[in-house]
Amino acid sequence: MRNNTCIICNREFEPREGKLYCSNSCKQKAFTDKKGQLGIAMVREQEKEATQKKMNLNFLEYEQYLKKYPNGLDTFQMYCFFRKNLAGTPTIEQINSYIKSFTGDWWEEFWQNGSPARKRYKEFEEKFWGDESVVSFSKNEEITK
Ligand SMILES: [Zn+2]
Image: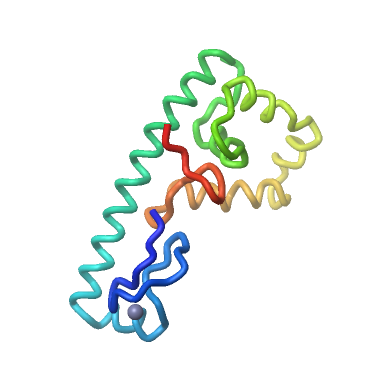
């Protein structure tokens, strides 16, 4: 969910994932003010619902992918790691051919601890499971199938 109104003073700002306040002074207020605490709790709850909804929808897509490609990626998390790079509504075949485009060299790097590919995956993993983030499959577009 993208919030575009300060939860303390209601001023609008440029929406950004996870942003709740217009300014540092409102951010500070939020931690000392009862209304602020309630606002945070409310927004977090909405984000959580949005995450669960999206994860459900996309899990159905993952099931379709596995049905068609039983030897494909064997975890939903790994699937989403690749899938998030594809904007719009690609077909299952397009998704599979994108995943297949990662060669043996890429996977070799991936399995090395501390490699750039592994680091990106770890960052994604935190977002994927974190309470405060929403998994979306492209930067500018959310899937609403
Ligand atoms: Zn404010």
